[in-house]
Length: 322
Image 1 (cartoon, rainbow, N blue to C red):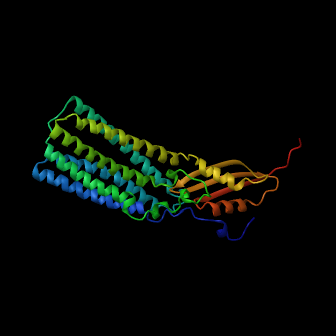
Image 2: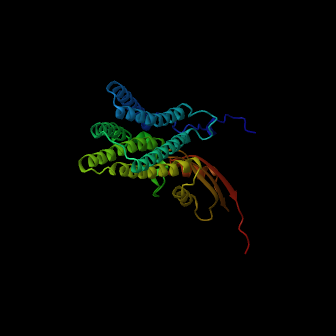
Image 3: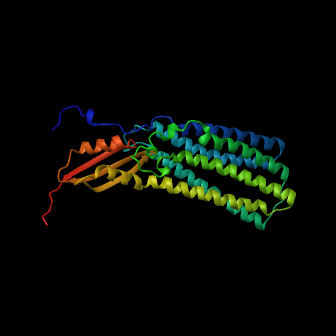
């Protein structure tokens, strides 16, 4: 029995999730901006008797809830990064936040589609000037929020520092979603969907006001619903794949290229994501002249920094007679 200190053979499972990510800072800024806009619009709607402003303020409130979920996911993952109850850390909280946001986004698209279809068959009288003013406000606020959450908001290093899609795994190209922050994508798509809705509304309202094309308002609503549905489906697929431990085929191929030489063959391989740009792997390797397991583990870690938790099982085989 080993009686020495086990510390040299042990490691933590935080994997950097205790650090504040760029996506968290940006999301909190966007939540604050959305809440301020919501309060101003609701207060203005009550003071000036504008139902359009009041309705848009309440609509902003619904998006503030979705953005709040994304912010909560960041904070929860960071504060519980070293909680031993999470076997591989809290990286998947990010994907869970993204998946939840995608479900809400799909619901938002469904509401858009239903309301647009109702407008086709039951058109209503539109106060064009007020509606256009509210749509412009929504476009400006959500445009700024989308810029903050997108690439224009500053350094992105905090969200992709462990991503294997930027050269960490040999020369193999990796699908970009495997290193992405799904939680931030969810928040980004929410504000982008709102900005798109405002833009389409402005186009439709101008066409209806000056050209008499009343059908443009519900038509643009349906177009927006289709686009938002596509974004939601993509986010559901990618974040759901992380939650269900979907294999990364490119990373799997890279591991095989790294370890399979001569008589060494991989008999079993499992690779899954445990956070944005972070992966774990279990490798079973068979060889007639195997090296120690730590040799293969260290080789993978050196070549692929995104592999933060690697378990290697080595079996010696004898060549069978013909």
